[in-house]
Length: 265
Image (tube, rainbow, N blue to C red; front, side):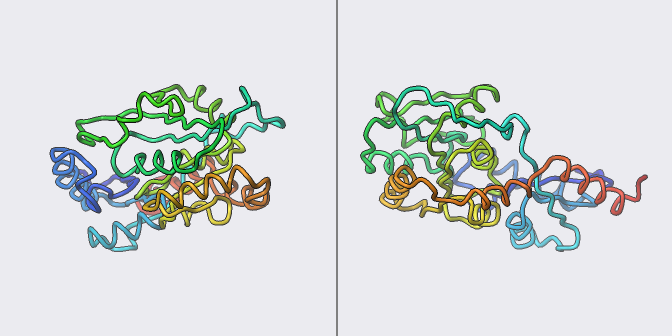
């Protein structure tokens, strides 16, 4: 917290934007610690222009101190596969996130149920940390629904298989600084539905379908639409999006920032 010759990477400022999404203890700790670390740092790296704008607005840190470095996509998710492998004949909608309020899973489940999709299932991957996110709920009543499957934490290899098998990936989060899972799903050839929030607009452009995360009926409509249409998003738009996110480019950008700002060789 007092070491100045450092670079701090910020994913998002959800704990400041809406502390109610976190446990009281976690929100207080983040609010105390993170701004002090950021003020002490020589350089701040944000993972998106949206997060940079949040840092400027909420913490009043000068823009010149903040650099944007987009992260990349793991190669295990972008390995080319000519034929999408499906297990069974039903349709699968996949969601990957921690079980926390801002991920808006309750509305996703409501939208899935309203959609009335025949021979379809909703698979939700991810766990919950009550020490950080408090008592997350709203979806527990669906735990015994045969059309909804909660897998908890799984390995990256298992996740890669799920991305490849799913028909639709859905992320209806209320707030994100970036959003790895929908980008990984896009790289795996999955159709992607994302909430219409600034960071998703910035990252996905025309390569995904956007939905009002506060409207379960709109979520239902968009799920049906994605399953009905063959070419919702042109492949060229998907490729244009994916080429922007490379770990090689991220490393080069970060090294250039370090060399300039910290005067290192």
